[in-house]
Image 1 (tube, rainbow, N blue to C red):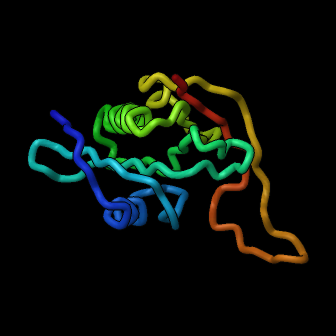
Image 2: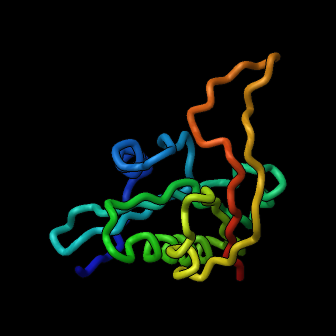
Length: 148
């Protein structure tokens, strides 16, 4: 199947995330989004890029893939990750990061040229002084990057 890239609004990308993503909800803020469409023009995947969630990574030259989801179309994830990198570089970013759960292989990221940095974070933001209900995975994650 032949795929091509197409711009998509953050709202439309978030609608895809809401419908298809296995463990995350739509994002509240983002810089840009890209979609992959099939030969009929049907969206088969989206990637959303924003500022890094971790303050230490938010240096003004680093962007983060905050969501990537597809309908399972072959090579769509790798295509979207690589397109996100090309767009980020064109905008002046020097580094693109993202995170995966231990249950995710990272094959699409490796295929797009990302390097595994190792395990990071995890845990809950819930605390007695500011109670929260966790609506996302809280286990440690794997950090990935691609840099110029």
